[in-house]
Length: 273
Image (cartoon, rainbow, N blue to C red):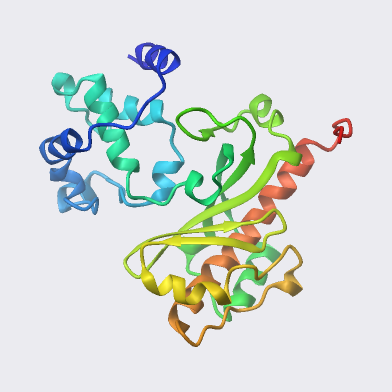
């Protein structure tokens, strides 16, 4: 099955699916565990079903990984068996990605990106907690960072590069566009894009109050901890506080990602200008 999926994607990359068919398929095969909105049901929670509205979960997986999950399943995620065709599964993948903030929406010229989770500890954790003026909950201390690169964009959008040393080495620092982290605000997903200097480049959310807080956030922050201040917005004070909390974690996690990249390219020949 994996060979078939890989062959199909190699010949014809996954295109936008049939939304109506996907909704019907979701109701038939997925609702019992994942719920109408993607919030796992009691049955789903007992099986470890994740929140499908989590953009980091979906963006952190390639199309072929999601197709394989739907068609083959795993010990904790039974597949519908022969009930789904490859085209049906492709419709569901497009359905899962639809409506969530994406890498391409934040960086339109993105060609590739990586995804890796980092757990804040030591000085990084102390700096983040100093910025939020309080402790970070244990679950807040781990954050997935998406490092984004420009280049020749594939027809179906930026590709997810696995954590493979050879493939990572092909991503040159000069093509770095920035970083993306995802969070949750006002009952919906939120995306925060950082520039290479770790200042906030853009916010993306369906929550209208985020746009009120944006002027107090976008363009703020930086690589040096001294440049990072709590966001203050008279128009949306609670959102500014929540965005400070996300940024404090994002800046430290992205800084770790940047150091890892610098180490990978430490002995590279200077790039031609």
